[in-house]
Length: 195
Image 1 (cartoon, rainbow, N blue to C red):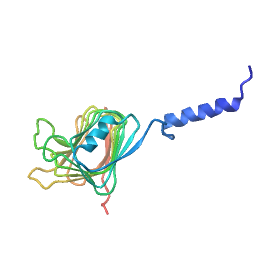
Image 2 (image 1 turned 45 degrees about the horizontal axis):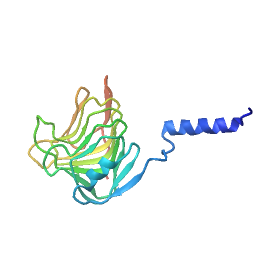
Image 3 (image 1 turned 180 degrees about the horizontal axis):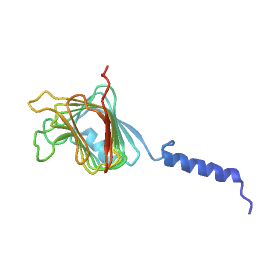
Image 4 (image 1 turned 60 degrees about the vertical axis):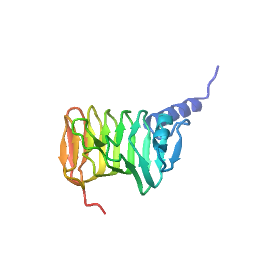
């Protein structure tokens, strides 16, 4: 049976585009999440791999936990608040992205690692985050391939804000450096002035 070679080329091109992330899978959804009570937690619990959750302007109550690889993105003015208790956002799904958010109000317990963002897996990207009044700004363990780009840490409490990646590199102060971490090394560059 004769097969048109153009079909095979088209299938190969589609497969390569999907693998490279150039095409969003048909099952992936973009969902806008209103700033009401625990709506962000409910949306994350219902999310499927590849979904994008867009948090609208306003305060979204944490803690938020990413169990499947999703993109969690904020519109201007979107805040995720921990209310002064525990970790605000925990990431346990490789391939997750968190972008354009203000993360505020973690707990103060050193032993339980209360952080603005706690990354517990590899392949995570954190971009353009502002972390306010958190004990640990970004805390990461077993986070091979973690990419942090544009994280700004401000603290109004007694303790100094800290960005920490256990086993790799620790950066102190505000704003945080841009870092890429792996199991063997990390590289960080100083941030430029924020507009």
